[in-house]
Image 1 (cartoon, rainbow, N blue to C red):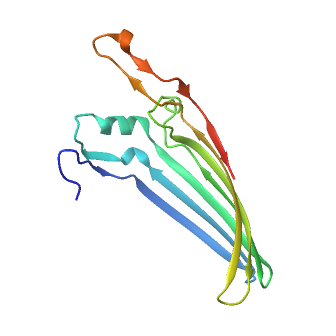
Image 2 (cartoon, rainbow, N blue to C red):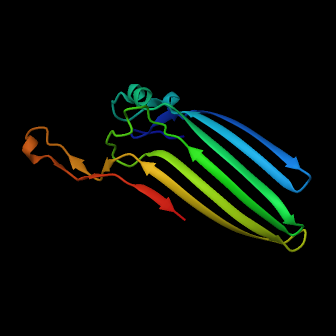
Image 3 (spheres, rainbow, N blue to C red):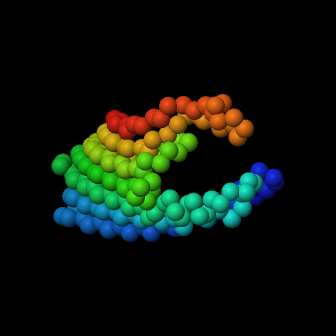
Length: 167
């Protein structure tokens, strides 16, 4: 239990997951998964500071979709090959993807995967995999400090904006 003067209590987003797979000729498997997460249903029940987080969460966030598709085929009895693709959309409502946050939030992501395996016997396998991801993020600042008495003393970092491409 998280208790004490600095404890938080919240309800995480509701999620729906649906998936289907089919096997063809006992040599090919094709699968697809769909996930929907309702980020606007995140609800802060208790916080150590008095901030209207729930209204902000509902205003800023929306439902997000993720789609995953993949296939695996046995080219030879000991050699399966695999390919897959994942796409995730933004959880931010339209107009909020350029809002400055204190850390970057992903706005969209796509991932391509590929691999193959070697089956030596029923107990020993060796798998090789490759993954390429491309993720776009919201702009953010690394620091800022606002002086409530003298605005000339406000300090803040530059705005950063980026996306990552990872192998």
